[in-house]
Length: 242
Image (cartoon, rainbow, N blue to C red):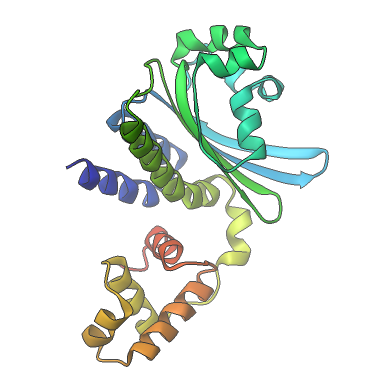
């Protein structure tokens, strides 16, 4: 049941068209996993001394100015981890104490930022995506439960990333629009979305498996992606399967 619910949230996210819709779906997904706060930030390095931050979050109004203060992130161990690494960080008060900034945690904790899971992706051309779910509750102590929770947050992050760039920084996607997919490419990708393998798709489309792989690869390239999974998400985002 949880996996089905999570897949539904992922589809909601990739179909978001506005900041408000994306925020709404992220907040709902976070609540499903037991988190009260969300953040999704597109980071664009325009030059060595010019970085742009475009974010969606649900920080309380009286905390939002501090949340949006980029100077504060310099001392935040979670922000610094995400700036340097792509591995998830499961954090709590101990991380702030270990880095000598317990006052930072003391300030944010009353607003629902006591613990959390944060992940970043770093892409070519100075593009980054920071994603986090935060809570006023302790993280699960059972290793397998915590590991699954991190996987769930990562899955949501992957679905939110492409949408966040298209909503918050659409100009970065102009070079990725690519060519229109033909009927064979679109159908092969549609069956791939349903979990069909190239051999299964070849039977469904009455084509040689090599031809199916050729059409799938063309679809991936035309959509400016690297994998079938990314291509499916981008096709969903553009309503190509409507």
